[in-house]
Image (cartoon, rainbow, N blue to C red; front, side, top):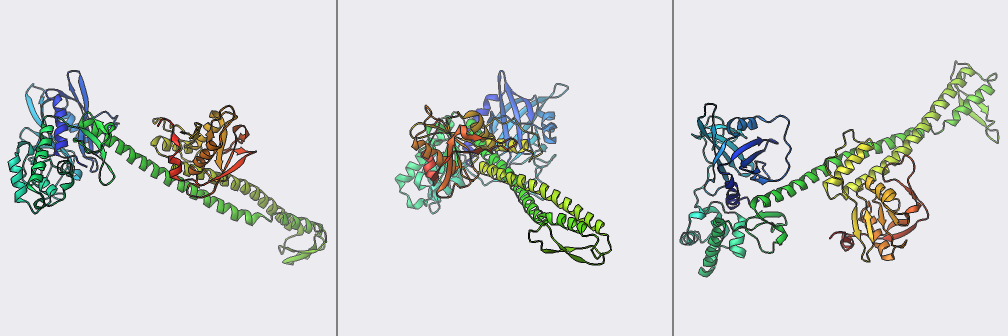
Length: 577
């Protein structure tokens, strides 16, 4: 990420409004972040300092950040030494990614003590360090000893030293002539590498803006006129930085990923521009954090549902095997009754007896296993017990098998809904649905807002709604839809409920086709061809008592066959866009 010295400079310019202000409160929401509440007169802002390896930065933030019940030890140290302290200065070290806040705090006797809060933004090596006026370390967020770094130790009571770095030139204090001289001395090197190696605070993004398509060329291949233009560009942007004429924007970089910078890149839409560097960075990392959070929620929930699904499959397999063992329970009743009927003629020393089966229309003989040494009545009782036991087991397991098959079908719809989820709210709604149905033993979270069904508009103006969870499917079908609206669902395939709102009781053929495409696309058959989609009026759809969310029965339906694709779906207009 191009959180370089120039971005740092822009943010520190913002922070300077709190010089002569105070540090009102201090929080540490996690092991990597510190939040300072800065106040000057009636102006209050949150300064976030993050040492997260993938998102290290400092900026004003408007995001709500939850804090632990018990503050960590480093937070307690900061509160002890600098909370309520007056901010004397806020500065950047050598146009590097280092923030230094000078704080004056009066002790119990009224004497003023000076402390420095230093934030080093260096990816995985980022740190937050508190020192006294002599630069003796009071404490740091991360303790660095010889086992971690042989170059520099960050430990309490040691003298603070700046991170080791190659000697470079501060571009804010440089001239065009000195820049051209450096380019001449490095003429067999790449242009962008030469700028980065010789000037503080310069990133590849800045080089792309200044050098454009010449950034990766060797300097000797450029004409003197081209070098002159590049030097002019360089100091044009440095002058803009000094004057705070920045154009904070979020853009798509050459690798296809989102990025940010304080100077506008070509073709950046105006809606991606921000008033301040802090707003830009806050938006960038909030969206990025939301995406990461959503992916993690998806991964965790998908893994959990797959585990439940696998257990259900094993239950079904076990029930099928046990039912097969008990299936012939009727024969034990026949054995019992035939033994009783022939009890006076049975040889009790036999392992089996041949008896006429009066349940057989041909009265054929049947071999009945006998328990040697027992009386016919005792053997008959054993067979009655076995009959009753196997019959009860068969009936219970058959009911369990039916329930497990329904559970499997339900879980298949949940997996499809999760695969189609595009926001954290939908994922949370699916999780709550599983909690309500007893699959997850956790409290329902109501913090996140409920997501809404997807709303499309057909090319001829009909409203089409698609459920994103089984709770939404039930809502759309049973509460939202009118009796004359069209209900659609893939035939015998897990998927979303689709409702097409009718106009004067009518729905066009075109709307039916586009509704069927949506039903097929948001189903398990989204990658199949000729997918059957059933449709009928909503009045023909019923929900059986006790059925799980999303499970309904319907009749008098028709079927339409469609082949879904993302290209076809993209052509169907999303409401509000």
